[in-house]
Image (cartoon, rainbow, N blue to C red; front, side, top):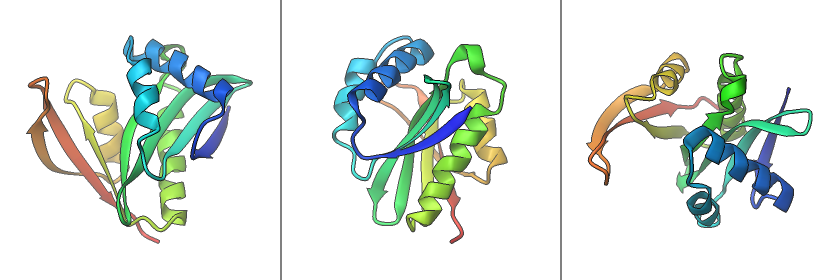
Length: 147
């Protein structure tokens, strides 16, 4: 497995692979994701490849000066429980530190227990909750980075 750090716009081939994997992980939504990617400032994607197959990703962007938002990620269901999510998180955090970010924030839902546990194990603190537009509660987590 190889972890690649991608900044800025994706090439067409990688974008297509991301859309396929996103639909595999979440069931649908790649059309909306593709549109949203173009709107994000200082976009960073940590991508896990096995040979030439994209098997995991973690996407984030600058939400304000020195603050990064870890937005979206997933691992192909066929490759879960192999430490890929952890490797992607570490790549994202290393990149954020190198780029001078002070904090990383993320939101998750209680039903995504593995993501919640991964974040807590990696130094995130729960700093609040809110209810999203679909009426579902979300947990706000934040981690201070050391430079």
